[in-house]
Amino acid sequence: MNPTPDKGANPNNQPTAADENQTSDVISIASGTSVGGSNTVFGSTGTATATAAATASATDISRISWKGSPNHWVGRDNNTVVAIVDHIMQGTMESTNGWFKNRRSDVSAHFGVAKDGRIWQWVRVPDAAWGNGIPESPDPSLDWLADGLKKNINPNNLTVSIEHEGNTGDTFTEEQFQATLWLHKYLITTYKIMPDRKHIIGHYQISARSRAQCPGTGFPWQRLLNELSGMPKPPNQPSNTPVPSNTNPINSLVDMKWLQGVSGVIITDLGVKTINTNNAYVRSKPSLSGTDNTLLRVLSKGKQLRFSGYTDAGPAFRGNVRWLLISDLDDGGWVHSSMVS
Ligand SMILES: [Zn+2]
Image (spheres, rainbow, N blue to C red):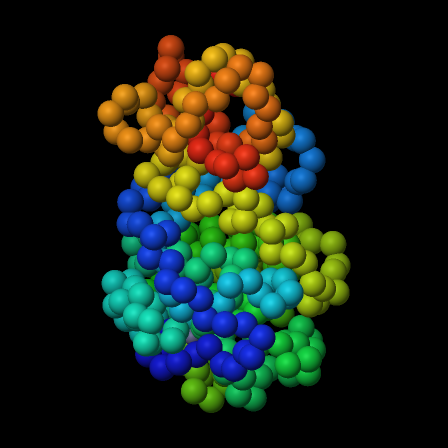
């Protein structure tokens, strides 16, 4: 990151209103993360049912803590994510959070990875963060970037940016390496990014002069690319093919607010299910309390809803810990699995 504006010009998009009411520091860090190399759960649009196999390869994204930043464009101006850009913070998670929360800094990234392995998120992936907007002698071997610049597309609209805690030249801790590896795999799988060095790049490849040391010589390119090289390559898609951002199921159909304070969330398309009891409580998070204000609404028997995920870390009801997440297409919220069939 840099404490100077990094959004670049983009006449077609406007900075957005504050999203403070979306922010929270209460998302818990969950254990039990796993990213299967063959995970296709996030791309599915059918009515797949969560089977044991799907569970094993699904990604628990509740280890990502939502922070929020007002510094972003809503949407990507009809572009889709093509590449990941890696950065170094030149500072700590906390100092970077301060910059990204500050409307006047004009900078942000989608994600930050701490030396101790924490992962924070400031901007939704379907939106453009302000991390890579100033092309200076961009790397000519990156076809997607050259092509985009020719069409006047701001690189922020084509990229996901990941900041890393520390200073340029720092060696990554093992925790930081494993966390950023997990995050790269998650993004590659979810957004169909090519897992190669042409699509996993450093900030210096966009801004060769002012960002020459970002992410710097300490960044573990070789180890990261070695680890990613076994991932399946997504089907070739021409770069910059317009894809509506609501085809990204993670962030578009599942509002981050449903993940706050909930551990072990697996986002996966569970298809349509039916409420099997009268007075099924829908809650803002899994809870059996009558007094914690989590009750959102009550559903009647026979109501059909689409479901987008689940957790097996909810409070047990009759010995059953599974809670299901209703799709935001059906107004979202959590319902205990015993009320659904
Ligand atoms: Zn940078």
